[in-house]
Length: 338
Ligand code: CP3
Image 1 (cartoon, rainbow, N blue to C red):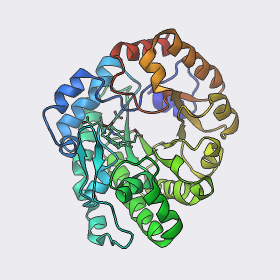
Image 2: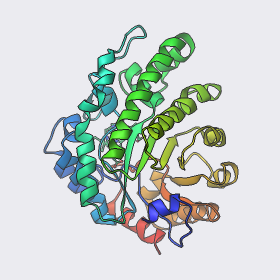
Image 3: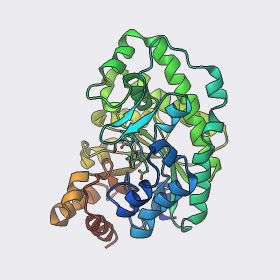
């Protein structure tokens, strides 16, 4: 597998490529399968449908990696938070109170609520070409905490940041529960056949820089240690989105093999400043893919030039957006493999 070989440090003339949210609404075939189940959580927890939409972008573009179709909010859902998705508005749930206690039984029974995800991983691994890696994933504790505390998406994360200053004990308690349940989720995906594990900390930028060791770095490192204790040796990809100048510190504190970087970071800075054994993944602006053509190709050239002397996995800096023309994705893949 070019994807795993690149992570292992093997040199190749080819750069592996996959794109975040590669299974999704920019594909007509995704929208067709998605239309068969109105509730998004039920859709994620139907193994044959999750498997089918995971395979769709591989059939079309032969990416070097597939990412299992699921959602980071399956973990709070499995902790009995009333997570639901409202079309056009995104995810919603009842905000978690700072004095609320999460029933310990939910943690001990956690794995039994997410067996459908493991089943989807098993089905997908059995159907993928041998050369295509399968990525299992979870949200990071902080990003999941923002949805649980805010009750949905947020502009400024004010309620969750209040916890960091006013409710530090409660923050530690919640982070600990999330470290344990996220670890269980990743262990079950690994045991079902995933080839790499990715942790999405999409809202890491909302944590003040000086608090990131406590809120961003340590909980993610704790998950990696917990998964390693279970005997799992798969590579980890971490995506602490938006922390830019703090990436080198994150890389020193977290024992992952791949660091996914967003388009807010200069590839030249990343290549120079992040420990040399870290594989870097990213970081084309999704809007450049939306435009396609020479504008996109020039941006790709700049990224590839910056990472010439480093192990690199090509990706976007964040997920592909629904209006992106499918031809532009083909154009990008062809250009990377030219
Ligand atoms: O191809 C893939 O990337 C696999 C599937 C995947 C989804 N969500 C499917 C999805 C992955 C890896 C995620 C991760 C995820 N989910 C993140 C982290 C990555 C990131 O983008 O920063 C986050 C923050 C979420 C939470 C989430 N899920 C939101 C805010 C929304 C609503 C916004 C939107 O785009 O509609 C979702 C829903 C969701 N998850 C969709 C998909 C394809 C769209 C819903 C639909 O098809 O009806």
